[in-house]
Amino acid sequence: MSDPRPGLSARSRKFVGTVLMVFLVLGWALVAMALAQGRVTTLPAFWQFLAYVVLGIGWIVPAAVLIRWMQRHDRRPDTL
Image (cartoon, rainbow, N blue to C red; front, side):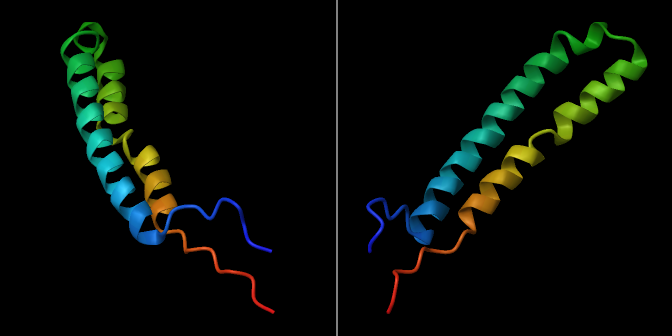
């Protein structure tokens, strides 16, 4: 029995993931800069520190999920 939706090959997943990663990093950087220039500057010092930490390393979680998806192995066809 073959899967009607075979999915992307590993090579295709890596290409799509790389493109998505570039957009993720660029988008995150633009949003982080906009927030850091606007809202964060009005906060007390402790909350500024916390906001800068979250804005600085918050992109790692979505990037890790994307990298895990990119590294999945191809599905093997069923053999007898």
